Amino acid sequence: MRILLVEDDDDIADDVVRALSASGCLVERASDGDQAWFLGDTEDFAAVVLDLGLPRLDGISVLKRWRASGRTMPVLILSARSAWTEKVDGIDAGADDYLAKPFEIGELVARVRALVRRASGHASSVLTFGRLTLDTTRMSVAVDGTPHKVSPLEYRLLDYLAHQPGRTVSAGELAEHLHGAEGVSDANAVEALVARLRRKIGRDLIETRRGFGYILSES
Ligand code: CA
Image (tube, rainbow, N blue to C red; front, side, top):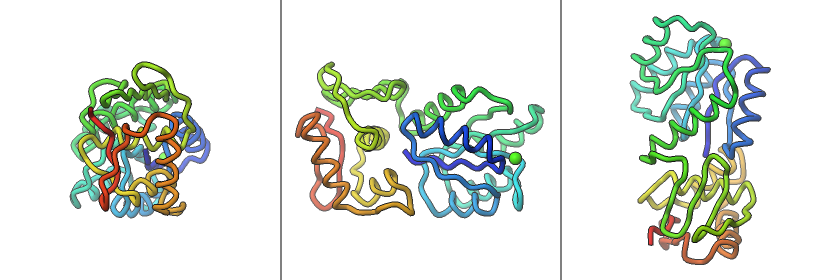
């Protein structure tokens, strides 16, 4: 799950990156409005955490530009001021949620996960695909109710597929969401990861659609 964090304060950014990474997300950070607008406009993110007071271009303008160019990813706004007018401006500009600073880091993580979940049509934090169950709060995996130990990268792969129900995901897209745009975008590495995961949780749970990619089995 790739998350864009837009925050110019290094201390806050470090805390948020640490907490979201610990919950299984791949976080990329922008520290000014221009960079944020460009990244959000050209790359795919499962959700965005957007500070409002930013150098170069303010958060509300960044959000308005994304929405004007048809970018629909869920956005949670962070603001130093808890003025209700600012909250209304944010929501009018296309924000999905709002959190005033200072905030509890656990609440931010829970809200981001809820946004991602709702955007993919899931109502609960426990996702079920046939025999496979993913508990996104505990980051645990079970098959037929039996827990299976998987690595953080393997979990991220399952988590990403689980948030794309009914859609076949290409190896390239998976690589981008697992490693980021600057990481290894190698389809062979994804293939090896899927093979390893299948040995752990069972062959049939991740289906391969030849030439298209991967999808979680619903049966
Ligand atoms: Ca700021």
